[in-house]
Length: 143
Image 1 (cartoon, rainbow, N blue to C red):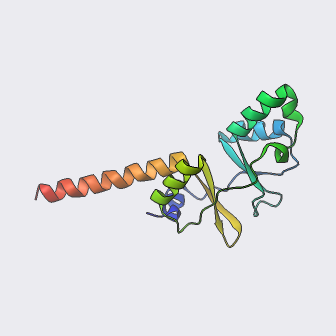
Image 2 (cartoon, helix red, strand yellow):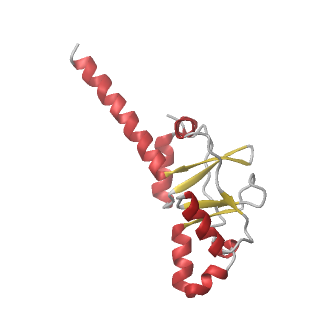
Image 3 (spheres, one colour):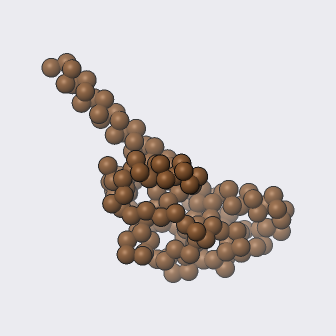
């Protein structure tokens, strides 16, 4: 199974982005309003400049206290973003997420943001795939 299948199953909702010059306070509001754990940082909504997660916010708060809310997203984001393509496999992506310790991976097509997969999306997809395989094997055994 490929990531494009995950995105197709997940739906075509647009990826939430935030400008690098936005405040961390605005970021927290965007995350809460959309019930998400990470936001792609992009000036134009198409090109990835970074990614910022709940973990980044917590680290900023631990370091700077409440003043962190007045910092810019660019000051706390992860600039070296792990990305994938829609053609990448789900299992390969799961390994990448584990090895790189990331929970969200933006999908890019020709250098532009195409989607976002979370570890939850990947796990859900793998469980569905394993369940299908199990059911096929059980069907084969009971013939």
